[in-house]
Picture 1 (cartoon, rainbow, N blue to C red):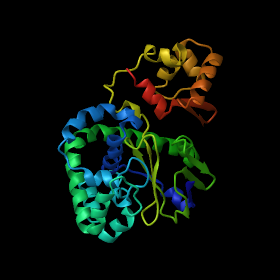
Picture 2: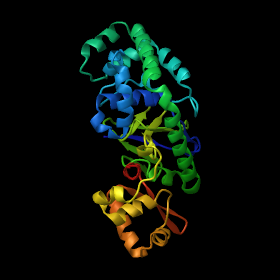
Picture 3: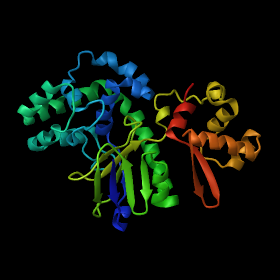
Picture 4: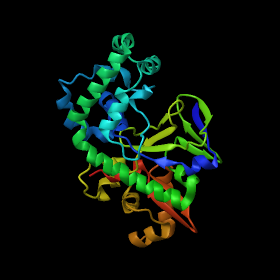
Length: 320
């Protein structure tokens, strides 16, 4: 099963990036529900869980299950590249009750009583959910948003440079293992089936910290959007101290740890060999193993092949 979009030249020209505090906030609810699947965010969890003991999040938990469909009205596509949380919250609050009702019937939740209460009065349900989102933001998210935003901005800058240097094919080559570019089509592996034209409106690409390790999609009647894990998300809660090769040596071997650590910025086999005092052949072998393990990715820039850490590789390199 997959979501497939067909691009025209106009769609390629209108490809754009944005990020959304509301998307992060809603995605973080899944981290609260299933921390074992989102171990990258344990420092955040430890900080906010004590604050949430008295918070009423029942409606939010009912509408945002651990897996499966989330009502689209909770995560409207960003209307600007740098949306404000208050503006996004008002978009949620302005959801027509009929739209909210149509979307919640697709939610698979264990709290069916909360879902029935919402369905009985969708207008009141939307108001209640918006109030809970505002309270949750203030208690658990607002103070962390500047750091999250900085990570997302860095990802957008990186992806924009990749798009400028290598075009659409290079952009989607390492966006996510479940995303692939085929000529004029973008295919995203999902638990639903959709096949359609973008119709000249382009696609909004939204980097996310809390969606890791998944990709999320939206399509008609909303503006088409693909939400993907931001590059370097494993460094989000670190103190910024560089990782030493010793921290990884026991896990992946000393030399491979040195190679992975040296890829703080993309580099070629020759440059890495010179920096580490190894032969290019030895570095190439270690890069092949790291690539097979999903820790590094490669792309060609002119005559040179550059290697860089994947988000998983960034996570390992951030361990102190």
